[in-house]
Amino acid sequence: MSDHTSIAPLAARQALMTEPTLGAGNFLDHAIAVNPNRAVPYAYTHRVDHRGAVELRGHSLLDMAALRDHHAKWYWANGVRPGDPVGVVVREGLEPLVHFLALAALGAVPALVNDAMPHEVMVRYLNHVGVVGVVADDPTRLAAAYRETPHRRPRFIAMAAELHAFDAASAELPAVYPYEHAADDVVALIHSSGTTGTPKSTKLAHRQFWEGKQPRMVRFPAENDDRLMSLMPHTHAGGLSYFLTATLLGLPTVVMSDWRRTVVEPVMEAFRPTMVASFPRTFVELATGELPVEGAAKVHSWFNTGDSAHYGHIRRLVQLGERPAGLVRPWLLPTEKEEQPPLPGSQFIDGLGSSEMGMALFGQMTTPESGRDDRCVGKPLEVVDKAAVLDEDGEEVPDGTVGLLGVITPSRTPGYWNDDRLTSTFERNGYWLTGDVARRDAEGRFYHLDRTVDVIDTVGGPAYSLPIEEVLLADCAALVQDCSVIGVPAGQGGGQLPLAVVRLQADAAASTAEEVQEAANKALIDAGLTPLAAVSIARAPEDFPLGPTGKVLKRELRTRFATFLTGR
Image (cartoon, rainbow, N blue to C red):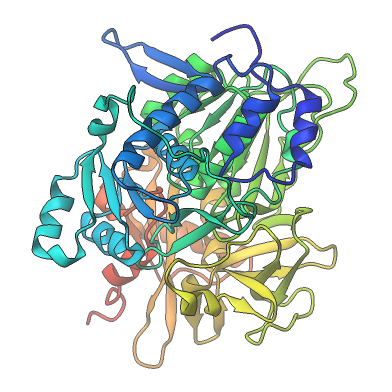
């Protein structure tokens, strides 16, 4: 990597904060316009060479524009026009982002699809979106599926390699290029994880998806030698959000194509990030077993979004790395730094957000010095006009009362593609319902207790799976490496009871379900929570099913264990 910084000067970043035409559809062009370091590599890909060594390849802002324009010429030649939805099913990493940039520059609407999505679900999803074409690394099965339903076949189903082989030298771009987006133009479709059912298609709009990220231009990064490792799936709003931010900042970023620790740790050692952004899945792996001390030696901040992370894992990660003097809270660029040595350990910023929220709208920081505060996601960020805990009618409930989490914010999605009815079910009394169950304390801090679909309805009242998981991971850490708690039928008139599917620590591999349940229930009773009715040990990967983004598929577990307690 070059010693010459790629980071945009502070004045340039400040100008971006108030630029009225900036949005998710044109952020690359704005970055090129204001950053004098536009030719310095900032976006890095990774691979392993023939000797087994990690090789990093950097791309500058100008390189990214050249890649975008090449892809855009192919799409334009194949008839893609403004407003057309196009399916993109390519391997995670930088490639889906290049397709996004190309399609957005044409005014088209990329429907980014995680290539780990089950094939039959993928076809249903693409049909729902109504894509005019699909580009895929391997379109063989997609093409075969459409032979059975030719009336649904998009205009083109192309192999991604065709784009790379395309001779763009003599190809044309539209007269107006890049496309000039209106504030409410849809610039991408992002599918949900599918953890609760068929993936939903969330619309991201040009200005909406930029709302709330403006303060990051001056508060992030913290230092001129900061480097970001982005472990988000880059077909997801989280990955796109961090890439947008990194591009505008010129922040050196390695765009990961795999979230597994076996791939991540060697790249960490080669890239030496100071910041790591991920969904919880990779943080679980990094916090398990021997800690990645060498790769994380310079990490000062971990950024989590999507599902909130668990304290049992967070407390191990913050023992790693070092914090520069003056780094005292999240998203802060210190105006002055005292001459003092770095503090040991790092900070973990747990952000509760979703594609529908546009970004993480709540943030809780944990450091080695922090006390434990289970399920606290902190206070709303400044982009949130109002956050509240609501009843079923959308009315606020008193502090301390559990209800539905709702937000009013310009960063929220315009809705779901081709599904106004579904959109309306998430709108209540002016709020957008996030799909979470929460409570707020008297100091205005919010506590995330569960997804609404995962609440366990016992005869004694609702029990919440996330606080139960928190106790298992933090208080039974000698036994439990990871877990997922679900509600299963208890029998006629018995409501539901909690069952935990548990992955064991390597040192506890011989433990039985009964031993884990005994330890867990002692800790749960001490914490005042509902004890487990049963424990199932996940001894193989298929026993702990994960979705395309690495989230545990609780809906599959509920089906699998539907008769576990009743025997029928």
